[in-house]
Structures are given as structure tokens and as C-alpha cells.
Image (tube, rainbow, N blue to C red; front, side):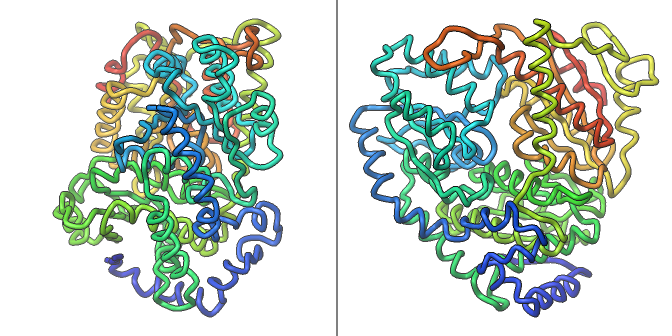
Length: 556
């Protein structure tokens, strides 16, 4: 069920939906007509196979289920997925939403180049019982390849070179670099996905469904739910709920209501991280963009400005946030309410938002299937790494402010950190700005708590949306929006000293290493900082050294 409370915007949305019908947008999407979004067919006509993903993946069910059964027969208990962005976000949602099914694998995801995060999985997972899933569409993602080389060598050392390949599988596109290496290293299994599906639209393809099956999800039921919405999305009338959703978010974004704030039932809250990437990377370009706000504590209406559209997604009979949502409606905020019958409606929601995002792109005159700014930060990061390999050290930045163990980089006029921090945030504009916290730190519960404390303080004091992203994970999610939107973001980049660094092997089965995970993470942070500056974004970089986060979280 989907219910809209749009107030004064209802007629505008109806007009947009009527235009969508008049211009035959729905049929043109299914005919893969690139002119809906651009005169250039590049990265459109070869990115629309997701439309048929539910049915196409059903054709691979026997291959997937036979593979999963072989893994269970061999007594594997854990799986570690090595990937970034579209390859990692959906598998994480599956594990966090459905939990651990008896007799299946306990799935974890590694999408951080922080050496502490890598070491955590090396220390806690038993290689004898763990399946390592190397997942990348391009077959050359630097983070994924670094993870693969490290763990391949690690597992080989623990259980022997003759056994290691049996603990690795690959999910990639045909002809990719990963396919070639996986064949050379004799991986247990290589799943080749349809190459005409973009990474963030790949959840209902092999990239999402192989990990889903490993954690015990019934793919038959799951894909049936998605197929139902796929059929509904072909309807060229008002029964097409996915098209209506796209018209709502696209129309309101064009009116400056571009902060799409998610309120989610506790058991399905991880869905927010997946939809965050889908919307941010698809719409954040050409000076436009919809900012998804995921995980923000829901406050009373006076803490929000008129740039908010709220989406309340809940499980049937869960009314945990209904009172707060009703308050927002009474205060005049536009609200979308979506109710799931059970957890398997997750599949329907995946498809609905993919289709809706495509429609929103049409309304916003944005090409939703490319990511033109993502490569920019990667290129700069590669240059930092090249310089490191030549000079043996990273270039040293000169701080603009030093206070105790904290170094601050940016346009600083204040004489102490607290004033500098609040002066930076004071640049925010009501109903327009947002703050993005970019934490190049080890993801863990304590860091989550500290960052959310900081987020809440900024939100309450400045009444602007605040997002949190761990680096480099967010580079494959919201990073495109940060550099491609209208430029209203304030970016707080947090870095720290690297302890217990780990080498990245130059090649599998070889000991030689030219760089470490710490160097890679630092290069990615510096590269993204420079890319933001080059795009005229406001950035403050805070190096907390060996300090904890309390120094800055209490500064608002």
C-alpha cells in the first residue's frame, strides 16, 4: 500500500503524471528509448536490462540453488562479501533484514579500506569455514581487488595453496578482469551477470540474489514479489504505482523539496543505505540532485525546513513512528507512506524504487544511469598513490589550525577549533543546505554512536539535513551527488592516524607489496577532498590524530 499526503503539491504531481501518460513515458521506458533522458544513448541502452531482472534471474535459479547446496554440504558457516557500492549494499540489506537462517551462511560485508576493518575479518572469521565472495561489475574496482588479493594470500597461508581457490567465488560481468583472474586462480565458482545492468540497479540480478540465497532467502518467493511490481510498472495508467512515486519525488525535487528523508521500521532500516545510493548517484548531476537522508533521528516539525519530503516505510502492524509521521503531516510536510505485508516485500520495494528513480530522472531532465563525477576522485587518488610509490610517502598538507592533537584544513579564520567548526557550519542556508559527514575511520558501534551524536547536534542547532558516510564506502554511493548537485553541501571530512596497517599484495600468491590499506585510504580521502574543492564545494578536513571523536562531537 502507498499513501500520499502532498497538500498543495497534489495538483502539480497530478499534472506531471498526466504529462507522463501523454508522452508515453512508461512504454518508452520498456522499449528502452534513451531519448527520454538524453540524446546520447551511451550508458543508457546498455544499462536497462534491470527491467527484466526478476524473470531473467529466475532462469538462473537452479544454478544458484545447486551452488548453495554444495556450499552447505561442505559445512561452510560464514561468507564474507568483498565489494563496494551496488555490489555490497544489497547483500548487507539481506543479512540485516532477514537475519541468520539455520543451516545457511552468516554473511558479512567488507567495503572499507580501513586496515582495522580488514583486520577484523581476518581475526574473527575461520578461513576453513568461510566462503569469500569477490563481487564487482567492472572486474577492476581497486578496493575489491585489494580485498581479494589480501584475503586470497591470507587464506592460502592458513589452509594451503591447493585448497584456497575452493573458498572463493566471483560475481562479475563477462570478459572482466576478475573473470580472467578467477579462472587463473581456480575459484570455486564464477557467476557471470548480464552486462547491461548498472551496479546500483543490480540488486535483483546475480549480484544481489546469489548472496541472498546463501543467507537462506527463498528466491522463488522473493523474485515473484519483484515480478509482480515489474508487471504493474508496465501499466500505462494510474495503477502504475512505481511511476506515480517517481513523479512525486521528481516533481517535488524540481520545486526545491529535494531532501528525501526516510523513516523506516527497525527491522527494515538497512534498506535506507541501498536506496540512498540508488537515488543519490542516479539524480545527483548536472547541478541537480535529490539528497536521500537515511538514519537521521526523527524530531518534531520545528526542526525541519521546507525542503523535506518524508518517506515512511513500515512493516504491517508496526506503528512505532506513526505518531511522529502524523505530526509531520499536520505541520504541512509532504509525506509518502508505504506498508509492507512481510519481509519479502523488500523485493517489491527494490524494483519500485528502481523504476521510480528512472521516472524521476525523466522529470528532472537528468540521465539516471551514469555517474560522471565518480571517476574524478578516483583519478586524483591514483595520482596520490603514484606519487607515494615514487617518493615513499604521502604529500604532507599544511594545517590551517592546530589544537592539541587535532589538525584542521580549510578556510579557517577562528583561533580555536570550536569556533572554526561552528563558523564553517554557520555558512548553511535555511531550506537549501545540507551537511555531509565523511568519516574515513574504522566502522564500528562506538564510532557510529559518536558520529550520530555529532549529527544530532548539528541538526538541532542549524536545522539542516545531516548525512553520515564512511569513506571510501560513500564514494560509491553519495559521492556522485556531492560533486554533481547544485553545490549546497557542507562537507566535514574526518581522518585519523593509521595504526596496525596492513599490506596490499601486488598480486595474489605473491608476498611483494607496494602500498598498504592505510595508504590507499589516505589517498582516497585526499583525492575526494581535492575533487570537492575542484567542484567549488565547501570542505573542512579534521585530522583527529590518535584522539577519539569526543573532542569534535561536543563542539557544536
